[in-house]
Structures are given as C-alpha cells and as structure tokens.
Image 1 (spheres, rainbow, N blue to C red):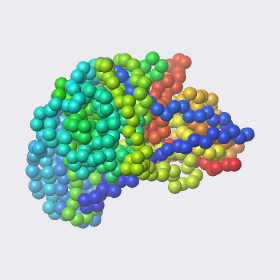
Image 2 (image 1 turned 30 degrees about the vertical axis):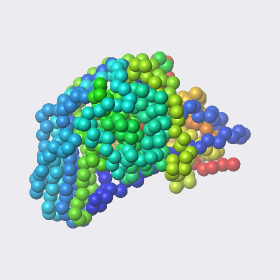
Image 3 (image 1 turned 90 degrees about the horizontal axis):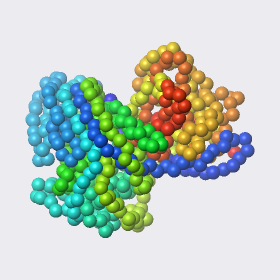
Image 4 (image 1 turned 60 degrees about the vertical axis):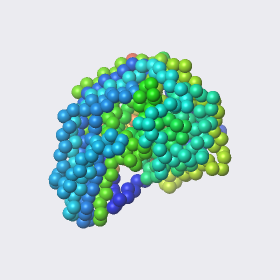
Length: 554
C-alpha cells in the first residue's frame, strides 16, 4: 500500500538515509562494544527454479477535496512474455474505472507496452481504478552459458535501447569514462555486464524511499539513489558501452525465499508494491535482469512486469491534473495459489558488495580489475548529511514507505544491529509495530555484538501490555519502549543489537525497509525459537525499522 500527495504535475517525496561513523573509545563504567563486523555482503550463487501462480488485485484511488479538475492518467496493462531467464503468462485481465472516464485511449507504444490514457474533464472527488488478473511466473536460476562477444554485435531492432535520454545520458563523458575503465580487457558481454552490476553494488548506496531526483548523473554525484535512479545509472553505463539496456516497471508480492548456505540461511523477501529494475540484452540469451535490491540476471517469481522503456520516466505511470491537488492511494493484494521454490546454494563470490546479492552461476566469469578514479573533480561526491535533526536520536532507520511487515512475536525473534558513534545513555527504543491480537506483553532486549551477531544480553526495556496498544495503528505505528531509570544502559561507541521479545499470545507485525538500505549487509537476523539449539544464523535481505533514543555522556 502506498499513498502519495500530489499537486498539479509534481510529486513531493521526502527521503532519509542513515549512516554510522565509528569512534572506538575505552571508558570505565560503560557496556563494552565490539567494532562492527564487515559491512560488505557478497554475491551468492544459486541454481534451480521458481514457479508461482497468483491472482492479483490492484487498486488505485484518487481523492481530492480542493476542487481538482482535468485528471489524466497513463497506466500499463501486464502482458505475457518470455525472455532471458524469466517467463510471465497473464490471463483473465479485468478493468474497472469509477466513475467512468470522459475519455479512454488504449495504446501500444513504440516499446511494445500496452495500456491506456484515461481522462476526466470535470471536477473530481474520488476516482478509483481496479485491475484484476491471473499470472503464472517462472524463474530460471540454472547456470548461464552466454558467450556473446564484447563489443556486442547488434541488430537494428535494439537501437531504441542504445539512445541517450535526459535521465539516462549514455553519451556523457564521465559515464563513458567509468564504463570504459570497467570493461577494459574484458571480451565477453556477460563479463562486462556483471562488472557493471558489481561496481554499482560496491559504490552506489540504495535509498529506501523514493527520491524525486532520479537522473543517472545526480545518483552518481550523490553515490546513492532510489531504485529508479540506480536503474537509470545502470542503463547509462551499459548503453555507453554499446549494450542495449532498459528500465522496467512492475510490481512484487511478499513471500519469503530461503536460501540455505553451509553456515547460515539467507532469507529474501519483497514488499507488496511497485518496483523498478533493469533488463540487459544478450544476443544469445535475450533480456536478462538486474534488480538494485540484489538480483543479477534473473528475478524471483514474485515479480510481475508491467512496462519497459529507455528510462524510468518513460516506463512509469503518469498522474496529473490541470488544476488542484490530489492524493493518490495504491494497494496491491495477491491471492497466491502456488509458490514452488527449488533453489540450491552453489557458492559465494569473493567480490564484496554493499548488500546481499544472488545470481545464477556464470561459467568462466571474469570481472573488472581496473577501478575508475572517483576522486577526479567531475566525480566529486555530493553526499548529503544523514544525522537526524532530533539530537535525542542517535541512530535510526525510520522510512516505512516501502515497508515489508513481518509477524515478529510468534516463533521467531527478530534482531537489528545498530551503531552509535559516541558514548550514550540509552533511554528508549521506538519500533513501528502493528497489533493484530491481544493477550501478552512485548519488550526490547539490547545485546552486544560479536562477529556480526547478537551476543551477550546487556539490558532490557520496560515491557508493554498488549491490551494497552490500539489495534491496527497504521497512521502512527511507532511504540516507545522506555528503559528503567535504574538500568545500566551506558554504551560505548560501537555495534549493538535490539531484539523484540514477547510473552503470551499477542501478535505484532514489525515494519522493515526493503533491501539492505541502512547499515551493513548482514545486520538483520532472526532466531527460530521453535527449534532446539536455536541460533542467530538467519540473515534477512531487509532492515528492521527503529529509533534509538538517549543522551550523550562524557
């Protein structure tokens, strides 16, 4: 579910990213802190397949109480396709528009996308659009055997996906410098493409919230962007190298994908919402994918494609009015009929990236060895400050705009690592929680860190009786867990963990941010308390939302 406030033709979206800067002090009377473990993740190679069937219900509702007039929207319809390592079959598409539009112009655009432009001439109060369809999705993660040479030999049919646009300036000198440096001494397209993916996931941070600025050059300057911006940057680099690439718009549904490695279980999940990714053309493979959240070459069968185009703007829906403001509400509901996952761990790469990424194996893969010089003046970083304006908050991950909500009070205990950069007396922890059932208590436990996992329990907060919490507080889901005045809660700079604990039969969902957008790649874990000898050996590809409050101490 998503809500956007819009005024005329513009969209205002605020974003917050977090970072931690480490100081290592040794002071008496404080809880000992261990230096944070390596923040980098790796590319996990898996093989196998996924097959999912679902009935999809998409609702988009416009509300206006300011006399908005002349509403227009461009939306896309899902289509069947098979290319690269993914197949999508769509059937029984049903469309409903209330009130009925003044004008409906269905189209097939120059990129092959099918959709409609809808318009309402008069004043609007509430307009609702509903799509319902069935979809079958197949994902192939078997070894990729591509030997297409680089430079790539192409046909004229791919020319549209080599063109430069305002958001994807593939003819920019800086973009071309990075691409040429990465592709030096590489002679297969697959090696060049994987090198671009790796470089992006080592050097460009992923923002959890939608950024109003998504041009490739701005993302490069900031060293961070939302998924649209990173997709535009990826397409710029690839097109500049003569490799056809396009941005894809679609939706995804939430369903865990567990991958068992020799030491740990990595759990991937996606939210019920819109998303963007990249498709890259291989003459001997077709269109293969790159998802900025950590998917190389293939996508899970939990993602539905709606449209593709040379950049994110051309691939996106459009909503605007001639006059007045409106609120756009979006909801995505899925009836998952079947979800078959047969994936096995093959190995992990030595290449380090800033997230947990997965890829099918690539035979004889060679990646870049020449690093672009990012200290050059045209590439000087314009990173934004990340500290909260509230001086009582020392670390946080508060963006719930792209949330995954997980049941956090049953058989699993979820934990999130946090890092503080100065001595702190922790006074409270705040979590975004939604209550579904009463009869129990909830509280937070704070742990030390050892080798990137929760270790010794240091203290706990007061517990909250679940009956004192209102049901379904989606408008303001943040609960405050105070620390007792007599509790020793002084912490040295370093890494720690918070874990949500519960008693009784209460059910609470904890909001999380999709992807490894804050902190390290392995900083969210859970322990399955329903089994004997449970361990913190389950890693999540998303970050729990939280705030840590207190006061600095000398």
